[in-house]
Figure 1 (cartoon, rainbow, N blue to C red):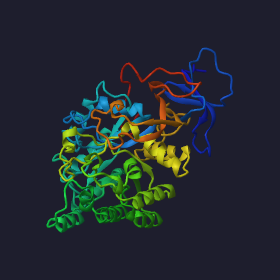
Figure 2: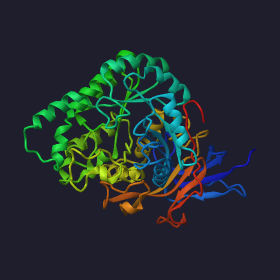
Figure 3: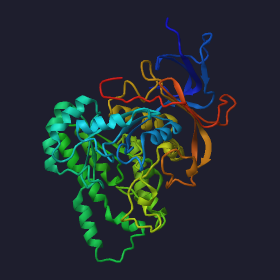
Length: 470
């Protein structure tokens, strides 16, 4: 038998199909899981062992919705900083959106520029979505054949000129190609009509731009529900898998339930910030809370949790969308002029766990929402998101009872402004493994896992992921 490179074991291992965390030893060869054995099994002599003890040993987190912005806007975020933040948060796989880089990933040439920008900078594995924009239908197949995992479109202006939004006519031109390729289409589901109507209604008012309520009123739930209805209609008509990104409006739940009942090919994600924050608690001028679609009220938040628990929402992704602090207009507090986006890669696991455990959800459910189901969207279900023989040996070891207070200075993302600043969270990452190599570790309260402080691998070892290859 070929020698084992590493054994990672613990008393609380999250394995596929198991109702509870259980003791197990994970054997690693050449970066993949080669066997799963009883934790009590005698260890082979000379094999390195990482013992997680009573900490949770879970698959590495998969985040299929991040904006890293390199090349072109590296002053917003870049591959080095984003993937360090990911590793520190137990995230081992990212799939990046086709904007806000320059060039955008809307052509094979743009994709090549994106790949070139990753060289020597990836601390975790990273794949890519392509973009659907007006007039680029001929570029979809070349991007697909080059290795993108699917495509993303906006139904409203994206905020950057390099990635214009599409109309129904544009989508009808692209859909036959997507159907032929078998490629998923990720949709930013807001329509301009309800937004323009809301803006017109507010144009004569004296609503202050510094009030969060002003921003919230400008992006009504109808913009989402009408866009989702259109996307689901096209999914049925063309037999294309539609994925609704960053759902914020719980009013969409009946549409999703009906689509599920009639066999429409679709999936849905929501984000940690929609599950954490509520409009009632956002102070005036606190533009770090601005995102599109917006965070809505407490009742809406609880309905999103219910839809997640019921399976209408498939999983959670960050929509990590950073920008330079001055673009957030924090000094003026102008919600209407501020850039919309939340940067939260490093905090995804504790943000979700803090609220999930309060609502009675288990670590196993969290692993489904953060690992298993996101991997499936990108076609990575046989490689990522689960601890199984043949899968990459990507793990996060974490303490679900550990508490900490969010200190922006301790975040590895390029810019530190965050709506989570000062929040107390549960869930402390102790170690992150990528393909069987430890890429991050920090001290935690456990006699079983003495580790060094905030240690990264000496050099980035992440891979570029492409559809159809390992």
